[in-house]
Image (cartoon, rainbow, N blue to C red; front, side, top):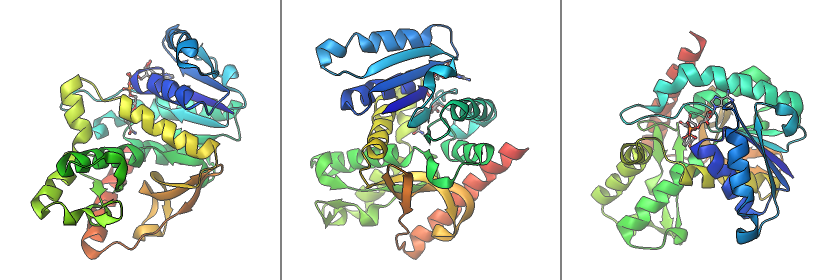
Length: 308
Ligand code: NAI
């Protein structure tokens, strides 16, 4: 199986590394616009082959998409990240042009690929990619919910002092500090509702910490995070390449689900070799429905900025 990652920056290079470690691809091509940068990252990662024991071939390319031909999955991480104090939404103008151009070049060489969109503002970039390429909705997947859910489970595990891998939980809605919806009501510790372990205030704090999880790291690091984003992409790519039928919250085109139309937002999806194989329309309560509608309004406003 062949995977292409566009953008050899913090997130892109970490995606390459995480996918190589999972031993799920025979070849990974990494592309960047900066002369020699992707080649350097590829060579550095290839020099971990013998110490880490993987056989995936990693190839770097400065904007030569012929090397990406025949990819099964392509991942778009190219674009600018946010700096402290910036919202994901402020990146829209620059990143829209980059994402559109990159998607077109990728599909010219890999017409059957599943496309994973990572660049921010991710829901709007996913919508743009869908509209610009005309691909069926199952083949365009925005990655955000996998990351936000892993952060949610981290904060739950910290608050409960329980192992994160024993905690189940999902974040749906838009991938923005104010638009994501950590589903505290449905989160559990091995099937037991987390409300048995945490007070309402403690749960509200977990939700609030999750929502600003990315911004907190941006403040600490001076740029946006990369380990958890890269690992989340690898988790998603694994589900596709190995046809895992895993339920992962992803940004996908909604056509009536969750009461929304013509918008890409995070909802639980069954992910397999065909990309999004099913959208799981879970029964939200009235408060969650209201949050989802509010989140949709914000994402839709952002999509409007795209057109202007
Ligand atoms: P970075 O600045 O470290 O890397 C971006 C790379 O893209 C740079 O190496 C740059 O040269 C390259 N690039 C720019 N234009 C290009 C083009 N036309 N073709 C090929 N390469 C090009 O940024 P970082 O931290 O890797 O973030 C990348 C994007 O991912 C940002 O938009 C960021 O906001 C987003 N992000 C999304 C997450 C999510 O959950 N969806 C999580 C973390 C970051």
